Length: 60
Image 1 (spheres, helix red, strand yellow):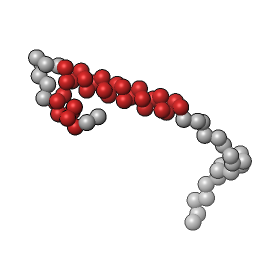
Image 2 (cartoon, helix red, strand yellow):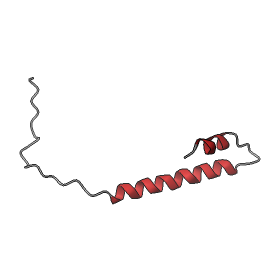
Image 3 (cartoon, one colour):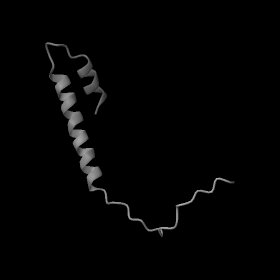
Image 4 (spheres, rainbow, N blue to C red):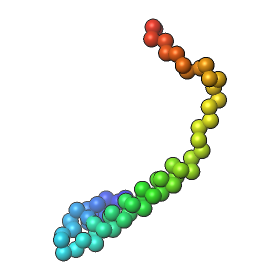
């Protein structure tokens, strides 16, 4: 999202809601893109044996 779109939306009055609608639409499109990218990520495979990472040593 560019600064010019934010400036245009912030200066929109009640008579001209088009910049605000365009800003909301561009934010929706960006959110959909991020969700599709996150959905495309592969699931992390556990490569450690199950006994690793179960205990925390609090004495240093």
